[in-house]
Amino acid sequence: QVQLVESGGGLVQPGGSLRLSCAASGSFFSIVVMGWYRQAPGKQRELVAGITGGGSANYAESVKGRFTISRDNAKKTVYLQMNSLKYEDTAVYYCNAAILSYSGSYSSNYWGQGTQVTVSS
Image (cartoon, rainbow, N blue to C red):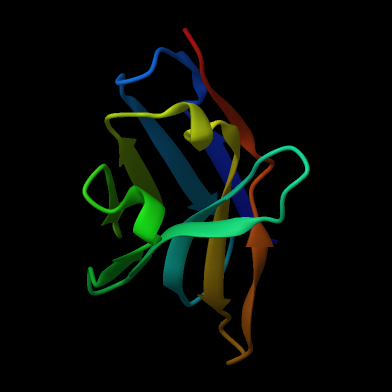
């Protein structure tokens, strides 16, 4: 069974920084893509950033230049460095993984429990 455990959320002032971490555990062949989504109250969940095993990353336009996603394949961990945080970054942030099992099946439906990020003065 695959588990994703997030950490690093919290309360920060506008312009501040936070770093989120998400560690994967369980038995599987490989993690194809890891990423971060967020969901603000009353809004749909949206992709923030994603990264492949080879390090190729993509970002939502709203976070480009402020957020950086990185990945440690040996630790099965993905990070999201968030700088210059804005009020509108306030949301629950969810880790997501697309995983290839030993049997060859593929699923992108693995989610962490979510971590709250609140940007407030």
